[in-house]
Length: 387
Image 1 (cartoon, rainbow, N blue to C red):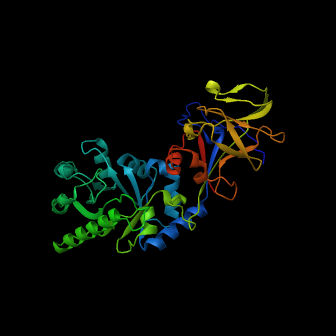
Image 2: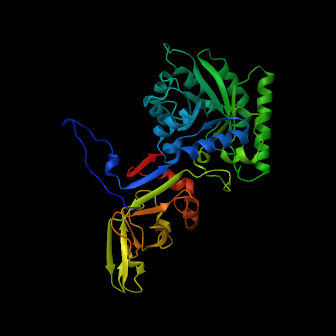
Image 3: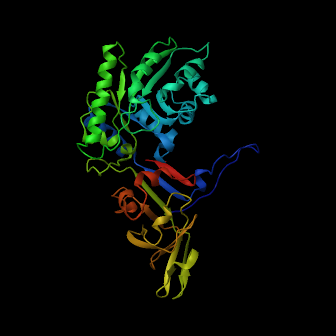
């Protein structure tokens, strides 16, 4: 299908400030299927037996944090998770009024007090900062601060060590300015069914919950499962599950019951003839074996394409597979062309399995990066469309 580009824009006054490239001036489209998102959310809830906390960190895995939050709220999502307080503050200031949980922050940073004022749930991940955390709650704070304790059950990242968790819960629960609402942890390798590592993590997490109940501490929100745990483990005795990549249909290994949501396409900006024996792109890593017709697409590693896929990458133009020639550049790639190809023809980098046989999963098979990595690197020059 041809793509007609109209670049008309009305500027109402001379003081108009442009802080990003307007959508109309972007030459790459990421199309996110809302119905597929709806299906994935419903399926993950069914499989986990819990409510769902979609995790929208890293700009919603590249899909646009503000718009994805709006979509998920319309789908009935009560809780949204992010990694950093900055992400949570951005969502709140964008108009999101629901529950948002963040678990990475600087206890001395200005954003902590901002988060207090904005009613953001915060997960404490370092027991040594609890006193400082409490001291930073404003005296005129309206309402209690909703706090979750992030407990380490084996991943050994930012989290309260397991043997110090009970005391951390006790210390936090004593503060009259805090409402202790949750306990959380994170799994190491839930893509592996019946993993002894994961089973031990789940055992420890459940044991901690029981010990807390015995001393009268019973947080209402208890969650450890990520996307793969929703599918591979019984987590139905917990309150929530946190799904990130699963919202977009990506699991490991890939589940046939999930629907891929995201397609990526651009369009042809030039066609040309290149004589036999000519090098294409930087360092002439590809030499034309014959006189060739090629076309140019305005997308490169500056947008999200992994440069290690140079000489291995394919795209689809007019329904057929085309080899990408030479090294990927930051802003453009050169592709083998057919006589039917013309300027403005659509070129799919990957699709959802229906509009293009190459999905983000098959696209990344020749790369050292995972589909999640590639999508999370989706740049500002990509126009995100929600359909």
